[in-house]
Image (cartoon, rainbow, N blue to C red; front, side, top):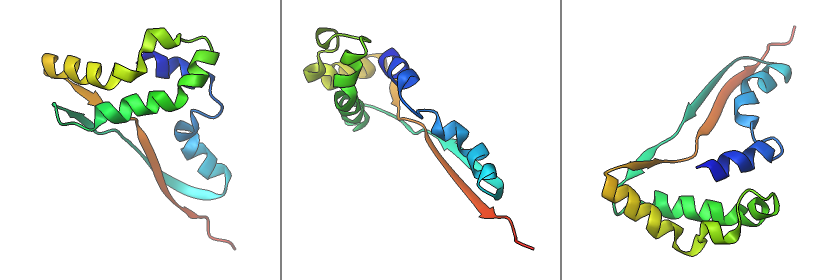
Length: 110
């Protein structure tokens, strides 16, 4: 959703996941093994629609303050139901946010 894209483009360190590999190298780790994953879900009983709406609700005051959208444009009170109805009607799904993780070992000291 464009609202999240625009918000996180302005947020401090919103790209920390994509910087993780380099940060681990700079911290003295060797050969970091990084992974990115995002689950996808759909259907009328999916919890993703609530999660998506509540995530937007949590940043909405800042989104409005940044001038990305107005409160009237979002109608946060009905967003979950509208997302669910639209996705179910289209036989579509909704991706969860990307999760990034890493495993690394410190370089051996001589």
